Length: 93
Image 1 (cartoon, rainbow, N blue to C red):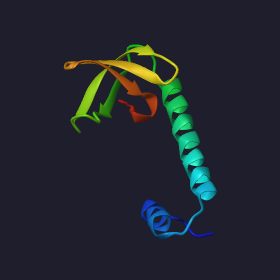
Image 2 (cartoon, one colour; image 1 turned 30 degrees about the horizontal axis):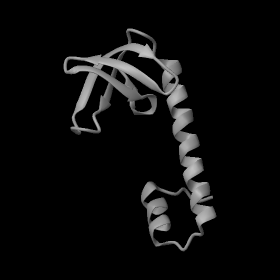
Image 3 (tube, one colour; image 1 turned 120 degrees about the vertical axis):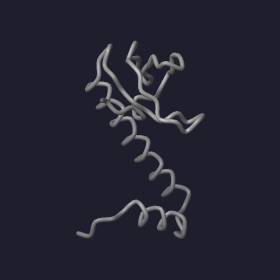
């Protein structure tokens, strides 16, 4: 079985002739994978843990301390203030 790279997958999606149902299926698979990643990260961090993430607003990597873990978002206190970050965007330090 050949291993696909992200570039191969992106090229296939951009250049492919997929139906709406097939594209919806791909989107559902990506959403599922992101939710599993978020759940895994939430299990690996706890209140007081140090994490890092890249701000989608500024593109700057930020480091902070976890102050709250909710269902989808984790509140991270940084020197620039508190941020509600999707769990799948966090990396434990």
